[in-house]
Amino acid sequence: MATKASRAAARLMISPAVLLLLGWMIVPLALTLYFSFLRYNLITPGAHPFVGWENYYWFVTDPSFKVAMVNTLQLVGGVLLITVVGGVIFALLLDLPMFGQGIIRIMVIAPFFVMPTVSALVWKNMLMNPVNGIFGQIAKAFGFQPIDFMGQIPLLSIILIVSWQWLPFATLILFTAMQSLDREQLEAAEMDGARWPSRFIYIVLPHLSRAITVVILIQTIFLLSVFAEILVTTNGGPGTASTNLTYLIYVSSLLQFDVGMGSAGGVIAIILANIVAIFLMRMIGKNLDA
Image (cartoon, rainbow, N blue to C red):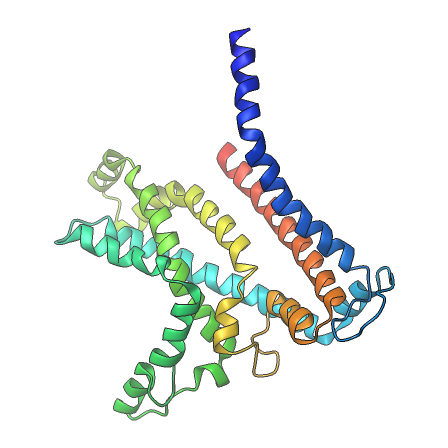
């Protein structure tokens, strides 16, 4: 009886927080779903008639949608490639004994705590600016023509900026996994004559596989909604060269004032994000069971 009473009391105490969380999530989702079936433009006064799946049809058939989807996939894939490979490399380096190891670890992790808008502005104005940026000055010093990153390679520039922000996260997770690696196993393999590449491929990398899967899952969910970096650097341009799905929804809703179209795009983005999350969760389940 005491156990049942304590469980009931615990459920009663956490119920306000659960209800608040559900309301915070469900109410905006329900309103988005509701507006997606209306012809709702902020610059058109009067009634907002029900149009069914019309907003979804026009959003999906818009040429910008295909470009945004391709850019989204390239953005997510590029950032994951850089952060996972770079995270493994940094985790291996941080695991080595060195002078000032604690300070170096803090410096590597620090970029993760910088606001996306701030880091994007720093990269745009202080590093990638073709006139006054550091990269441009280095190119001039070696006799090369500076690259206009935001004009010539906008999507790659966004990938580099976002990768710089998420690399510390991947490094932290993978470095934590490195701490649980059995050192005696590595020493035994070394005594048996196994070289470093073999030890890395057959011992270190399998040990890090679960952590890598977790990094891919968490980062993918967040990378699907990258927005601030695009807004303050390229505004989705030139044209739609750096427009992803999130920015396309912003353009439809707040620049073109088409709330119905933007809501339809939001519902589509939610569905795609959930499909990706379910797929990755199954991958993690299979990895953990292996």
